[in-house]
Length: 360
Image 1 (cartoon, rainbow, N blue to C red):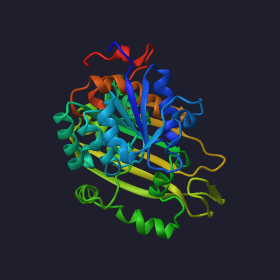
Image 2: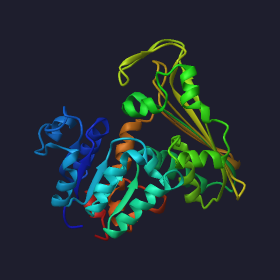
Image 3: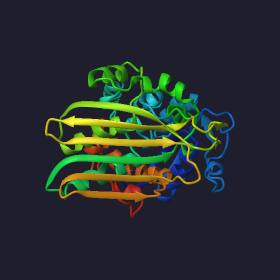
Image 4: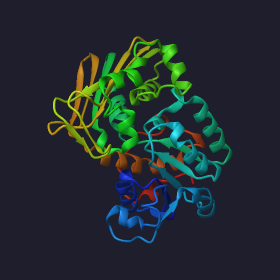
């Protein structure tokens, strides 16, 4: 591409502080920004980034359809909530205007095994308007490409075990509430844990019906199996509360979580495949105590056993950088809803991002 990539930001919360700055520093042009928060609407995007004015003021999301239609940016970055039902409207607005879109929404990384109808609908709309939709972020690399690349060094693979922890304080109130933070153990068991122990078919139906939300690893195991060419026979999910021995203040929730109550949850997803390879993955999202930090650990069992550990990853910044580096591949991908395991492995952008775009 012989010009700067023109980008719109949809959602101007915590993640956008990095997303907008990163795309500008990678040589793109910010042309629009949207949010629904009255205290944010009207602000210069530079004020949100803390960089000084950039001349782009945040518009109400109600104006997104009109503005995207008029400006026709190359890409819209969606950084709002964590499920496909939550980002459906944003993706739809982009697709109907022929604007490529990429989201930090965790489910959007591989929504085919949890929100198939929504994804199929978006896929059809994107193809009709010659644009591409996808999700990216921390899981794309640290739960995805990093693991499948490592598998390329294994002679015989029998099991993939993964565990990743993150502080729900960093991602906003919707994510914290979705992880059960602040609930008593009784409330947690009634609202979240009540669906533990169900069969693959029962869990899948409740996810499709919107009764329960898939844990992030539900989608991640689908991504990994797709990348590795594995065929899923069964998949189960169990959510258990995480607690702390002391009271913990949650700024995101605006309350103090009493000792013994849920500070979040551990979600374990177990996948059995036709090829005999088992995936056992766990994500731990909770309000951190003073002793806690992010950690990413994956073990590939077989010949030979191999373990990869990432201590104290800057998960928010890595999410935003991974997504930013994906943008040229998003533009080059075929039209439709294209998950990232079907794209090249993500890589660092040495030159301005538009120089990596080949097809459009």
